[in-house]
Length: 379
Image (cartoon, rainbow, N blue to C red; front, side):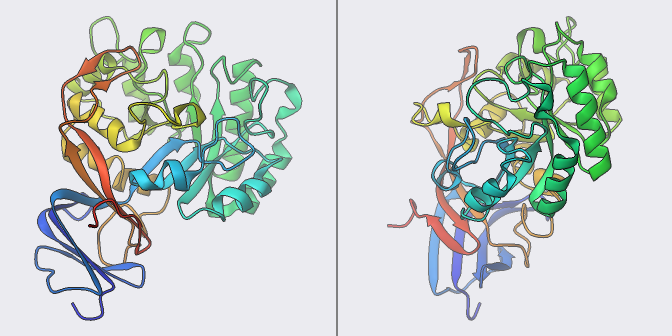
């Protein structure tokens, strides 16, 4: 491979979109992938050998809180996400119409990470001091639509978190406005549902449209999507049949092995996997990150290829970025993550302190647009 800037050889290369899975190499030139597969040989200006690693497209975290300022939940994406293998991250509502310009300049434009935003329906975004939906004038439909038009492809959709912690108003009224604005702007919703004891899941799902995404899929307790018969609730399956998508988000309270295992055994896999990583996760031990969350879904019964697809090709398609990310195909942006499974890693524990055996993935090399940004693997 003449004139290759970077050649990475790995014991296993996986691209779920193209079907590549086995030993090989990825060649990179000018920030783009130029060749992938077992036949790729030679050397580049820089060559890296990772015989014990799996090399993937850069991981995509579909629901987290990248924000350098302006959000009570925000963390620096280049510090908390990128070194751990996440090259693209979608913000759940860290900015609203009022602070969208600052978010764009201070986080999206200023970060090496690729950041997209689900614009908060609340014009205030996520300021300190309580729920984002706490006064009726927090929703300004004209301002929201204007921000979406200004953001164009940088704003993926509209975030509507109806939980009691985020919504002190009538959740039905809030969702009604969110649906109206999203329809007007031609954007999907990212929805955190209301406590079912306040508003039955069946009624909430019935209002959503094809392409809308429900997050916090594998909660337990009153939130559980698992019925008394141990199977996924019929209304949840019906929603998927209508085109509603489901994100397995692992926040501080939103992942249960019990729920995940039952759903997976019932053939109901998430469409995406995410972390809800935010300020309270900083400094946690063990660290909270996407490779560890992926490891928990593997321990819950998903296959490796199904897990890889849900942090790669699937979220890339939902974000409208399949032409650029989520793949190791030639022409794609050279975002790559190399993972190894650490047998000495801390146990895999869910939000109810239930644990499962299993190895934990950790990133050893991260490449963003052809440039090495986390060189743990380089001696």
